[in-house]
Image (cartoon, helix red, strand yellow):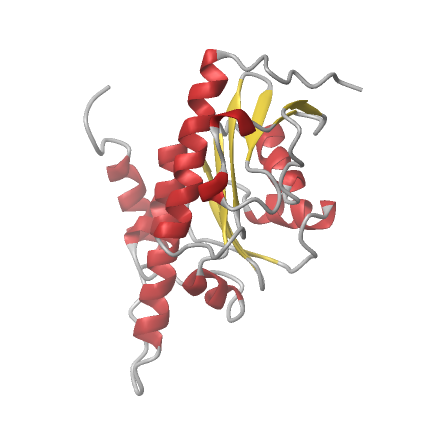
Length: 223
């Protein structure tokens, strides 16, 4: 069994933990989760820092750093990691993700109950790799849920989880969080438009989405 490095947190891990806690608290303040639902993780080398199970985010302190290796063995801290660890680790093992955000956002979860894929109501779907799929339901914290999620994430950076919520990833915590927020906003947009009696929302075509995908390649400031 891997020995837990209690009290041996590196400066990089300490900084990443601070950012992780801030992001987790933001999911609550922005209304994407309630209580201790949802979870956040960030990868530092081969260590994955994760929010612990059942601990309110406003109570997390610098000394509560919780980390596992890519096999799920705890290597940092004493708090039990999130029950959704299988999903987070599956993303890190199969993508270049450096951060993962999972929420129970209301509008996104509502959409997961209605359709197998979020309709193309807005071009920001391109920022997630294309039409956002809904992963079939499986019990939380299970390998079955992780497998269903990975299938829905194929060539995407986010998906919906039926009767559950959302998961997105990115190269940074900010990017993963922004993708979560955009996904929730698009779900709210579709629910709002589709609720108007006698009207059907206008949807983008695949060609229109492809055009935006190309335009987004040059979006933002040069690096």
